[in-house]
Length: 139
Image (cartoon, rainbow, N blue to C red; front, top):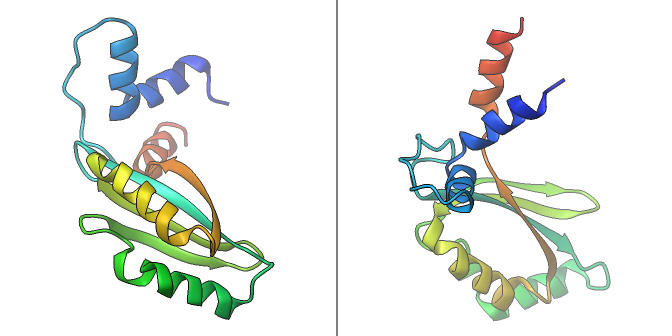
């Protein structure tokens, strides 16, 4: 079981969380440790593209073609880390990108994917390295 203190220590090691906590406490920002998402200023986002079951796959694809989805997604500077089809749900895409691209990604999805998909967004980070550290400390 992870204690509150341990959870706070793990969360505060994440650059975004540390910056928010320092700002809220009125402290000067401190240099961020390397981000598991790929370096300072890089973010990860998992996007659920849920199929609209009132439409056929051909109707969804026609919509995506007409809005430029296939040409424009992902935008330049964003890297697709994973893209899975989950039967009964739709597609799940995880992107890595510079933080300043967040608005561009959001607007692109609003303009091109809506109408073909219902969307959900989840800020994401790579926990594998932290989990391995915990495993080595707790055999």
